Length: 323
Image (tube, rainbow, N blue to C red; front, side):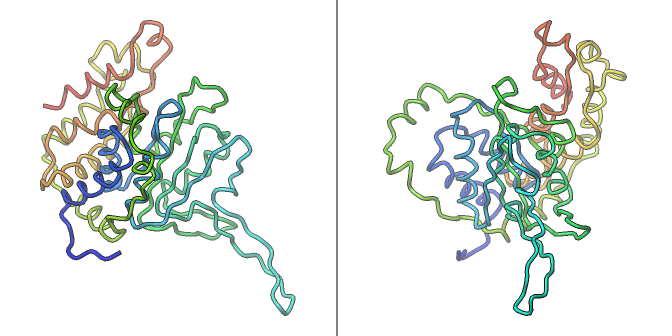
């Protein structure tokens, strides 16, 4: 792929979303947050009922990036070695034998972990080191993963038949948890009537891996005012029932969010500011990324469901603390 001039971050965002939008109808907010996560260097969990084109969204994003792509279909019989790879015994022409590591599908820059909650926790955990450390260890040897490395996992609601809830340690590896909702009436009509040729038209790469890495580096240098950092700290502390001044948090939250959520909030806000063409983070950047960062980290107790209190309502209260 040849690029005549390095694009700005805003141009990068526009090109990426325009390319994916050729195949995906609607879901602009979800696609935009996926672009933010890519520049922030974090991973994304897409949650929604079957049939909402979650897999197609990820495949389309991968097609728009000039990066290696691998899809892993999670099933009840999937083993950790099916993801990370395994050592195999090989014999050369002199009949000398040795073990060699055969890489699994995790060795790609963009990973689609499809229906991640349809496989047991042991296999889900195989992604932990890869997502956090950007490497895997087999037989005492470290194997670095590609850079950039971006995991997008799809998940059906926990209430669906034959699913395994992701443990908190696995959920915490995701920068964002994004809810994929039903399309609007007009969007659904367009989905049903659009020409099959247009829907099947291939997406060509519009951004390179070097561009992505460059923007990831630029995002780290975006400025954040001390007042915004203090506001994020207050938000985190108000999510914890033992110190919160919010009655609903005291009553219904079993476990508030930890410091990592604050780090992710700032990182994602920096990426959003860069993609919006700014050199500093604004309160709106924090508010925009707060819900996808916090939604899978705020654990409610059983009384919340009984009284009809949802995590989203409390997160809105917390977001309101950002002036």
